[in-house]
Length: 231
Ligand code: C5P
Image 1 (tube, protein in one colour):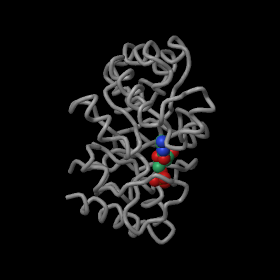
Image 2 (tube, protein in one colour):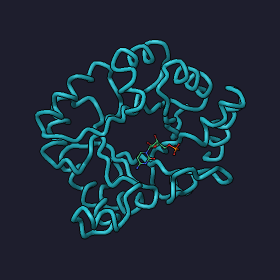
Image 3 (tube, protein in one colour):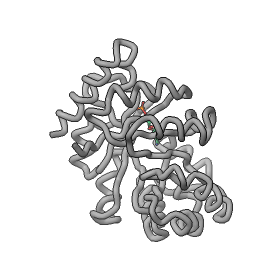
Image 4 (tube, protein in one colour):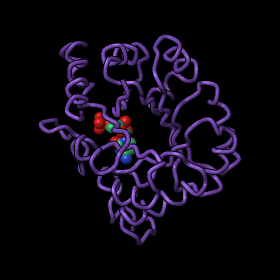
């Protein structure tokens, strides 16, 4: 089974992450570990998680620094063999290229515009383009530097797909199945809409993980329902 769902393991507890993986592994292959988990548990915690569960890793560290420092950071986590590793496309072409060059086996993944930023926050940072235009610029720049995947808002997927072609994997958070709480996500699409717009993968967190409170079984069932709705 190849699933387009990437489950966001947004927890700082190794034990919880492990249980979430066990509950959903029937319908999910790729799991996203982000800063919350990584900064608390470090490489040792991540290695423990990877050793005990069989899954592909999306390591969402959103690296953003000078090229030499980013290359060093990539080398530091290379041995965990993430399938995807995120860097901020805004770090520039040389930075993305440095990441790609030291670990060509990892799909270096450019984060375009954070979905938390709107036109006025961009303007306050001196960026006169709107979020969509800026996201397209960042996407093109990251791909030219060797990024094999991009993270973008579901609302930007179709325009970015048109610019970068079919080979680049587009990954989108901000996805909400009908009837799910929006939480703090404002600009959302349903999973079906995001895939129809050209996304390869959907990062989903709370619409699935919130069912764990009920039971691991309920969580697994929720993941399965979302996957089935995409068939
Ligand atoms: O719980 P929810 O489905 O909102 O989780 C979405 C995941 O995607 C979280 O891990 C969040 O950090 C991440 N993300 C996002 N928006 C971005 C980039 C990443 O929601 N622009």
